[in-house]
Image (cartoon, rainbow, N blue to C red; front, side, top):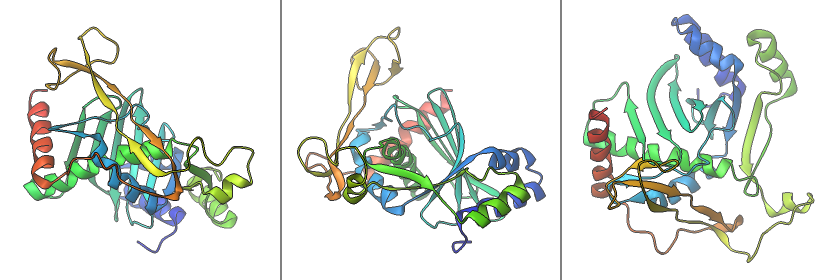
Length: 274
């Protein structure tokens, strides 16, 4: 399915889901907005995932939201889709694979340390948890980039004939198909916006930080990293522009397997208490 276009992949999965008895998920695909994301945006998010990592807790920025209430995300030409839903500050992504099977689930609450990952087909080994933990941190980071209009642009996707055919067969709106790519300096030159704000620098991420809070404070959440046991997350910030390159912060600690394993174990402990 890797050679399928975005429209072919969505319509194929919708048919498989309906055949498998998952009509409600098929209907969600029919009503969703569909986004194909440049693989380089995902790679950049993966490089900067470390910026969100603190000891054995991870924090998700408040703008790590899908671009629509219900949407699908396809990363590059991958043969799978993420069906994304958001409700207030809570986000859930279900990864759908060939045959209409749900293979993984990711969820988080924006602006907090609540992050979880689950595989529906793999043994719950340390290696699987390590990979899943990394993706659970990378996907919200990718969405912070998608929600940064000075860095990316969203345009229509797919051939007109293909979109119209999909609309007739599945009732998916002809304007529901989108492609997300880097907003280059050349594209900026054709717009009324300045290409860069401030000094011209390669794209990098200024880390967010945790602020001490009390339980009754707005958007406070439990954490063991403050003396009060409660914290508020202050978002990080994307600085620079991808057309000038992408660099990792020199202040980033190394995210090794042992460090991420501590994060995974902390998530397990937190989940077992709920």
